[in-house]
Length: 376
Image (cartoon, rainbow, N blue to C red; front, side, top):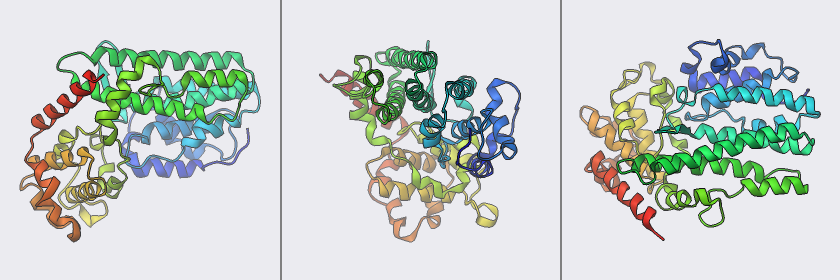
């Protein structure tokens, strides 16, 4: 298959810019085929994908960076263009075989947005990424009338959705697991949304495609969606929706890219992450040369992000955690914050958040979860 796309060398550069730490490790076996693809990216010829190596590289780049602060911009390629380039059933099945490799890739290696649900296992934002890619493959299978590939992708989607439903069922009523339930709710909303958005943009409008489309759109909608997810949709809307910004402001702190430990989890529960920023040995008060910036650069990015989105509690909780764990608190790093924003450390929402410990904040959030759960 010939095409025009992002050069493998550029993809390699982008991955190394945001997650170079992920490339150090084993490359053998199915579980590590993503790393093997990335470390050998420059060996892949540009503009041709007869053996699936280029698609594997795109999927690997997305796998490694989607939960980082600077994801590679390959979404449209892996959800649409790669599948539209499949002109024959043989092309499609080759590409689908490459996609199958992702089932062996461990999201926890490259993401902090993973919830290990008792009795179910890990649920993560990566699940939604693969749902979206599978939906792209399914749409092309319907267009090429490839029943075998369509059935395989539908079976994967249905099994994944059933697993998501089981994850929420396992924690929604469990006392002491309310915060985990909220993390599951956030993952569900993200993942169902990814699936719905891809299916909703299928160019094919045949009766068969429209029937399949109806199965997978608006699944998490509170009133119009799948009954298995209606309650989760209601809780997400009332408790977690406002905690889902894109965190673009944190890109300015390049020091956050140097270690897997610095990846951001599921908001608004960022107290522990803020403490990590204050203590992690990969960070310094002032990084040598100032190219990356140290802890102060992270604090400055958090303050700026808070001021840009003042209703997001996650930024405040990260600052509060940082303040508790850093010797001298936020005041020690005030000079790293832009002069026009420095006063916000001494008054208003940030100062109020510094006075609320993690336990009290989480107790308030649990009460909000219970109220949303009990609402009719």
